Length: 299
Image 1 (tube, helix red, strand yellow):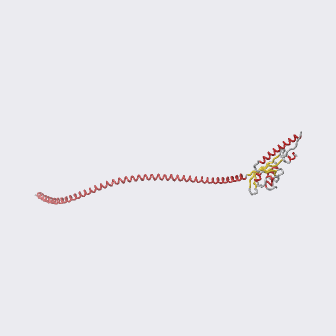
Image 2 (cartoon, helix red, strand yellow):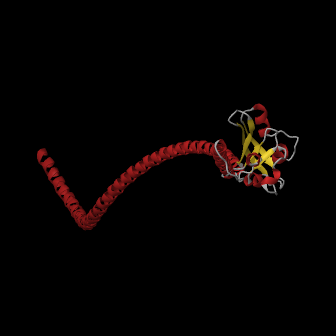
Image 3 (cartoon, helix red, strand yellow):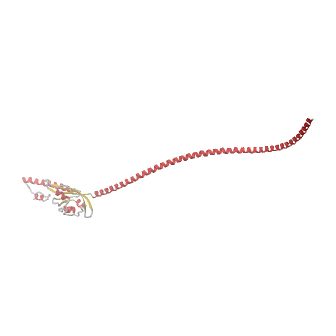
């Protein structure tokens, strides 16, 4: 009865009765075996209950034999995990018993299956999940089932999409920046050419300013020369004015002298007239003398 109860899964069954000789040893061994079995099963159950990732176990017949609350929450299953035991894996995971799951394929091929997939939940959400289904065996190599882990990578996938979009935006921005840099470089070259022209114009303007300064200096020297000449001219004018005054005085003196000469000439004229008259008288006397001489000669 004890062995039958344990075989049926009642690990809490107790071995009752008193045994002697070989049966006593057998009873002790049965109790030890059940204790070890309870320890192993307890360890396995503890490990399964400790799995925090969404997980389900599919039996060799492709029916669910275990699922945790996390996988039910991810797939939006409303009932308790134990209620899905015995359900086709296609129905549990994909909502269609006729569909093959990664666990079914792992059982058929007896090798691990891994894939990224999109999963549409009953509420209409689209999840990006990473699925790993791994077959497992007992100590004799008999296939016991497939352990399926589902990892929700929706947030990571969305982040990757955002990063990809940002990369595209950054690439576009970099391309635009490159074009802008090219335009700026072209503008810089044009500006450099304009600066060169401006420098050339400034140099020409500087040369013209220098020429203007030279011309102004020459003009200033000319003005100074004109001023000096004007000063000399003014001095000469003053001297000429003094000379003119002296000349005027001399003219007056000359006019006085001319008047005196004229008076003297008049006096001389008068005297000459008198002398003429005297000469005529002398001539008459000489004529008389000549006549007397002639007459004397005749005598």
